[in-house]
Picture 1 (tube, rainbow, N blue to C red):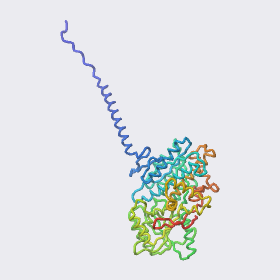
Picture 2 (picture 1 turned 30 degrees about the vertical axis):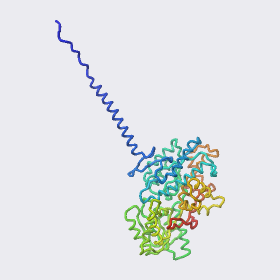
Picture 3 (picture 1 turned 90 degrees about the vertical axis):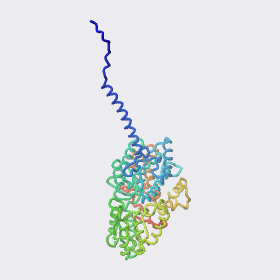
Length: 510
């Protein structure tokens, strides 16, 4: 029997699982692409420049630059010069090493004075790089290996020390050839943390203007500095005040100190002064007058401190605090019912008392008037001053004239402007920090400049810079004790004038 029903072919078997799988792959690929696009967008949102990322609550640009990223408009000229010299080094085919100069390169309103001091340090470091790389500049230290100068940002008050030190440690192990770190800015808790991290990683360091005593350690070598530590500054200040009491038995000395324990500059300066005063028998009047920086009400506190100073009538006060708070004190002393004459003696951070170039002319003029009205004379232990080199070197051995020729060649200016350019010491100390590390690098490379130079070899040669091996720095001969501090390095006693100049008063020794 035949089946007359028409033939109907069977539909193809559904491949539901296959289509689901294919769809899943397509969606996954699309999702991955979208995620990668988001990652790239997010990275770009966080990146200031290659290798320099926005970090912390303020989204500061933290990282290491070869000069191509400027960090701040105020640094544009010197960073441009650093970049050009680095490019020349890289294209020369000569062996080179990198030295990083790190500072808190971002500031906030009210702290812009620090930024302009840091520019001075970078100018000095760049000029030292030029001297080291060009034998025609008469440095006499050879030219191999060449020096590549990198610049790193520790963030406001050095608070972003961790991401920066992580970058530096990585660079000491790769083709960036990092052999040492210099600079370090102000003595703060973040600075201490950065020093501890780099010391543990075996990277030698050279402080420029950083002076807190706790940074150095004879038991754990690795941190050196060209600046007199707080203990030496306090000792020099006590020597000066003791001389005044020898001349006049009625010469009275009081103390004003900051109780902010997060600032290791203030705390070590205060402790060092107290110890030196007790050791030398300096007579002090009453208990220390105190204030607390970093919190509200500082101006009110200084109003009270000024009243107490005028009631005590000391001839001098030793000020264990930062320069910006000296400004608070001067302001309070300028009130018509105070204005009692007193000499304020303090450490190297006194330069922060001046308003920087971003302040208005009227603001600076107002402060000059207040200072004159206050009858406060400000003296400080300066780490570098052009007149100090002239006192410490014979005329034929003074490295300052050749340095000044190079400065004018690179940055212009007239020779009669030298005093203003160098008087705050920032350029001088920035130069000496990089110059001294560079000398150690050349010693590690040997007479032919071909020896292997790494962080360990650089550290070994820094340890040899003592006694007769002193380096001729612009701030004076530099040699190191076992703790990395300069050995009995002289300081300048300098008077700060309301018009913004620094008058050399003599040589101070610890």
